[in-house]
Length: 171
Image 1 (cartoon, one colour):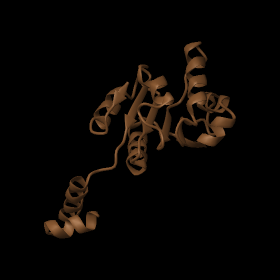
Image 2 (cartoon, one colour):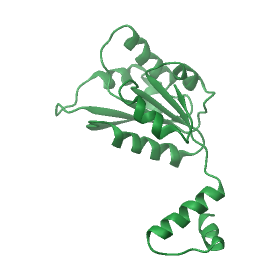
Image 3 (cartoon, one colour):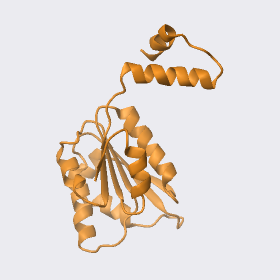
Image 4 (cartoon, one colour):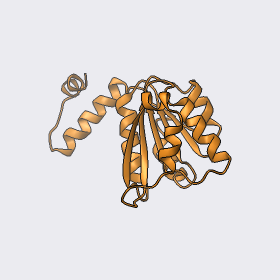
């Protein structure tokens, strides 16, 4: 499945039971990372977080599947957060999907933040047509959106910003 930055939260909530791979891509690393954090908070039982790098998965593509199907040392549930650059996690995700399709067992949720990748990358193309994966592209916010957010934060703190001052802070 594919989501946009705007409808990600709604689609993610609706897909939590059926989607196990979340691919966050695009030039807005902060937005993608924030969405990954938000998604972890939406998980019914996030459990232990296992962090992997794209370089680790590029050198050992089977590692993702091994980690996703192994249990936590403390018996809790777990989720995997992968920080990748571009298509570094492609082969590992392909291996995970192939073994899942062959009936290898239930895998924990996998969240991939791949900032140099786009929704046209090999990894996004691999995942977007699947019902068990969600691809979301994140673009940097425009100045008007950031200015609005600055004003909202100021209002929440009881501080009134003029339009010019809020824009200067946003820059």
